[in-house]
Length: 97
Image 1 (cartoon, rainbow, N blue to C red):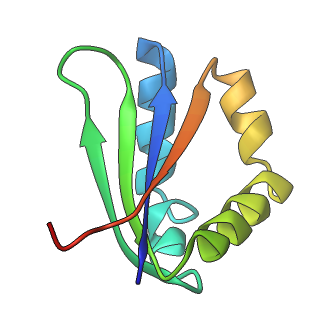
Image 2: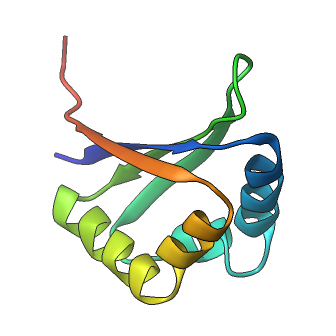
């Protein structure tokens, strides 16, 4: 069964602009969508704040964690920090309910 990851980026207005520019760029979500284990990635913009939310479906939590580790190694943490962005990740399990 697949795993759902909800990545919430807590942004200020400038951070939201920087993040959406990154996500739409050639090193952004086009890379994420081809990463091993990625099934689906959707970007959601909050109407109530400057937050950016990624709804992600992965083959497993381990696939997503490997991806996040790779992003951290390639500079994501520095990018987020320098733009005043905080990241929260929640994992959810789909059900048949």
